[in-house]
Each structure stands twice: as structure tokens, then as C-alpha cells.
Image 1 (tube, rainbow, N blue to C red):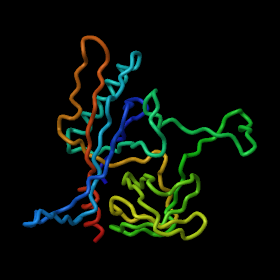
Image 2 (cartoon, rainbow, N blue to C red):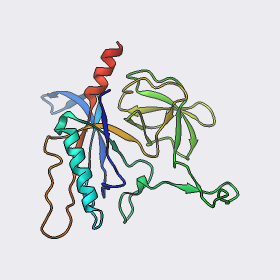
Image 3 (spheres, helix red, strand yellow):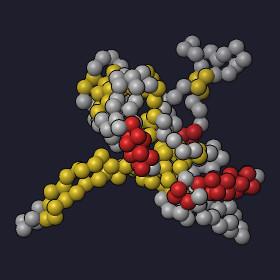
Length: 240
């Protein structure tokens, strides 16, 4: 795969990060009675944005250099970038908390010997059974967390969202539909990133990273993205 740039969420932190499914449907138009029938011809793709990215006093020069570096490396829509997406945690008044590690003590509420605690994701998932290319139903193993429906996870920068439970196979194994269709085959027992999922994207337009520094105050730019579906299509054709 072509070199992938990673968005530095801890440095260029958005105040919101809406990423939503874009279903692909077709209609033959309305009948004489005014009825329109719609058919889903493709599972769809993701679109989204990082909004109101906070430039902070004391950090603005480091942030500006990072912004310029990313803009140059991407070269507009031709470049590929892995964008972190808010998943299991909620927005807080202080901003994008999804990238703050969750720190926990041991079961007896004691830390390690050096008084540090360990990191554990809010949701921990594995692919319980092999998921072939283009499948829309998968079997997941929930290792930590309490819900399996409506959870987002990624595997090698392809991001998915689970739907309503189809079947509970065992105490911690579940069959669920996913959006979009599986972009590349996922092996059984593969670790899935559910706490900090990432999405392989291109800029929505060549000018997305244009920025203006005001005479007073700090800029609050937003950047829009579209899933790099063409990359997954090319990989599928190579493996055919």
C-alpha cells in the first residue's frame, strides 16, 4: 500500500469529529401513484470531518509546522491519511477526549510497583471467525466492554460499525452486521481497534487544508475527508 500519513490527534485536536455512513442507493423514480422504491446497490462508504481544530497559544508554532507538513505530504486529494475517529467515548467540554488513554488499577484497586496504572480500552474486540472480503456479517469476540451493537472498530485503517445483534454464539461471541462491507479479509483471532479506530481517507477537495491565521486570536480550521475506497478496490483486484 502507498505510504500513509497519520493525523496527529493529540497535537491537532478537533472539537468534534463527525464521521457518518454514506449509503449507496438507487431509485427508478416515482410511479404514477407517487411511490418511489429504493434499492441498495452498494454497502456505501464513510465521509466525515475534523471540525474546529484548536490552535493553542504556546503550541501554535509546532501545530502550524505539523499542519504544513501534512499538507505538503498529502499534495491534495492524491495523498492517503489515516484519520482517528471518535468511537466509544463521549465529547467533553475540554474537547476531543477519545485520544486520552484510559488508566486503570488492578482488580484489587492497586497500581503497579512504581505507582503507575495500566491502559485498557473501553471496548476490546477480536474477530472470532475469518471474515472474507465483501462480507456484511461478521462474528466478533467481546473481551472487554458491555455492548456489541453500534460499536465502531478498525482493522488496518478500514473502519466498520456494527448493527443489531443477529445471534449470540457463546458467552462473549456474537454475529452482527457491519457497515461497510469488509474492505479486506480479516483473519480469525485478529485484534480489532475499537477504542481508537482509524479510517483511511483522502481529502474531500484539494483545498481542504488551506488555512488563514487571523490578526488576533488563533485559527479554528476544519478539514473534510472521504474514505479512500479506491485503495480497497485496487487491493481486491490485485488479490483476485
